[in-house]
Length: 81
Image 1 (cartoon, rainbow, N blue to C red):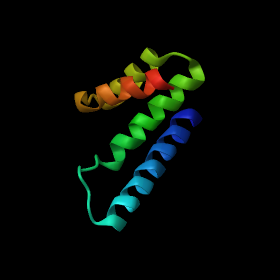
Image 2: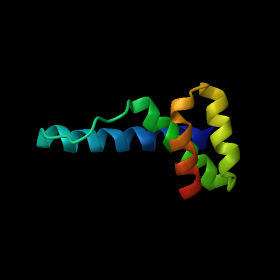
Image 3: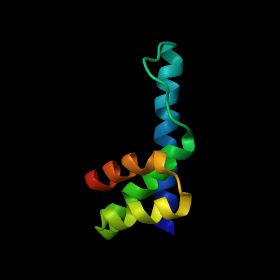
């Protein structure tokens, strides 16, 4: 559970940093996802890096959320981590 929390907070912090950079410039070429999506992807990335099981981490987060929209970013972050 601490790895899920650490990854979630890291993902949320990344979202806040990116959002503040684009709000400061007032010109955003794209729309950011919600902070919850960044937290989920961050938690999957940290979990997969710590346990060295990317598919297990992605499926665990998917089972918790039941959200198909976040599945591709989950697999991408788990593969990179």
